[in-house]
Image: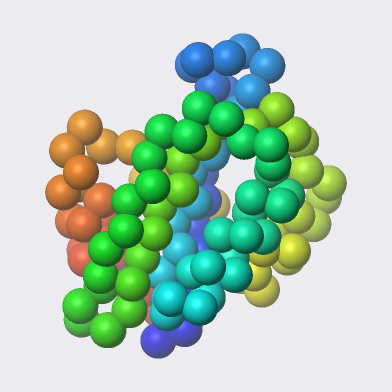
Length: 112
């Protein structure tokens, strides 16, 4: 299985001048670190970092990381290709009240 990157965004509820972003990275540890750095470089400085969840996708022997933060930076067009070759917007990606909800989302999704 190859690395997957999903994202979602909305206007921040904490700061009207910012957008709130979610990025889910599924892959091996090296890819997760590299992609996380790219995200921070594009959107930094980030603030109001809400969550950083990590876990394992045991079916495929991979790991995942969810980044959730606010940023006032508006990236240039084509910003997704600077993160990874394929980045997909997913409106089902958001912070759940129960942290186990993310594990359910990851395990129930078809990652092809």
